Length: 320
Image 1 (cartoon, rainbow, N blue to C red):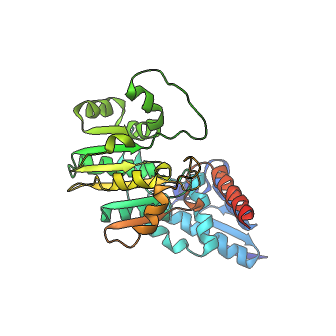
Image 2: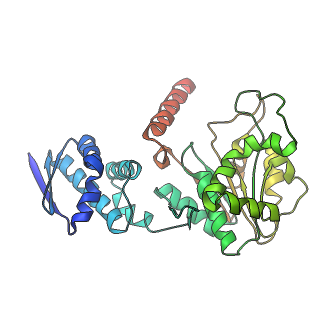
Image 3: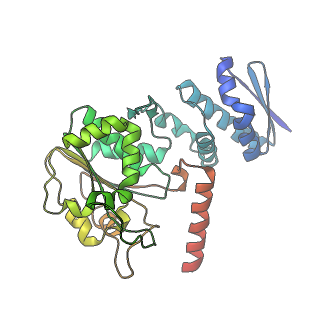
């Protein structure tokens, strides 16, 4: 049995570290098969030497987040544990402190993983960014946050959000209403992100002025988009022709972000994904960045990571 003692300077940091009903410490104990006890300002970790070393690094990593003003959640505790297992916990300091914008409810929007941090930096530094990865990695949400930040700073005059109107494996039939009402269900995730950032009233005011436009991809043909931040969501469901059409809409003083999940292609049989082709042929062009997320960047419920892993294993087995 090996023991390690960590001294915590401030009692409130120890309280944050342990979490509600000691849930954060329980995660560490289960992950590394150790015992963690609090004695005043000291935290004692006991168990096998290698496991204690890992648990110590995890606790120190979490204290780094707390010292930087981050609040611990099940997701970022889980992420720190995965970094420790990879021996990459020293990269934690790169991740914290980067607030992109404040939502309508006063909540700061920040990258929660190293993959998200790289994605945000790529959007800042490049004119076109392609972001591909599984569900729940924040591809669309962070892109919308970057667009709102650029709009508030008057770096651009318009935010344009678009996605192809492709049904996810089911036929919706004839929807009632005018053309806008017919396509709105396809664009709902984009509306949700904008409502969160701006609030419903502010969003509607900007939309009426034409400062924010949410439209299906077919509306982009024939346009040149200057002074705009353009986001193409669900890009895995664009054809090669649609993707080329979209990318060539780029005007002066504009940014483009293209997001998608190449494991969720809903195109009819025989149609090739425009996102896959774009990632392949544009990867070495200056001022274009290709960012790939993994299941480690998932910031939704823990089960989402497990579901993605299970499907990846099934797909690999099928290919073999």
